[in-house]
Length: 210
Ligand SMILES: [Zn+2]
Ligand SMILES: [Zn+2]
Ligand SMILES: [Zn+2]
Image (tube, rainbow, N blue to C red):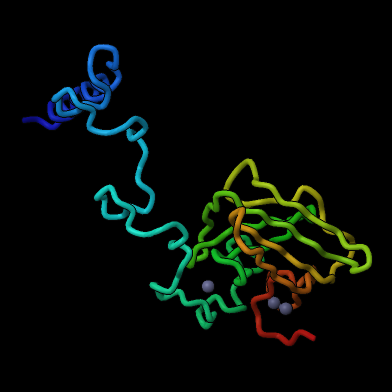
């Protein structure tokens, strides 16, 4: 049998199955084996079982287990190679306090772009992250709220950083609505590093910082 014939047959089989399920007036809904008895209740179609990794239709574990890294080697004592002297894919600072890690990058127009990264520092999507930043003068701090960029997987601040180029910064992440907020605190030094191509906050070289 030629491949195209097989494909056509498979396609018409799919059509038959779909039509079979839609003909609720003349046949028993969800009676897939034709014995006149529904094989399952409504709503079962097109709804994958969450956490069913082996495809047996039963969840293999409860929710939240995917965030538990105890069963892989990313144990997070941060002895691994992105420790401190590696910049993110855009040349920003990698924040390792949050999982997945996030790149903090200041754009030319002084907005902050946050990009979540996998362990190979490739941008990844996080479903509904919440990121806010408080920075600048402690007695009159500036709050930045971030929203998803229209293009790509990053988040961008709606407003810009305060004036100045060296001030305390606190980034608060909440990657799911019921997650405990995670904070990263650092001094945002926007001066050019004298010895590498990055700004000081994302500096990757070994020169002494006061
Ligand atoms: Zn890490
Ligand atoms: Zn440097
Ligand atoms: Zn430096």
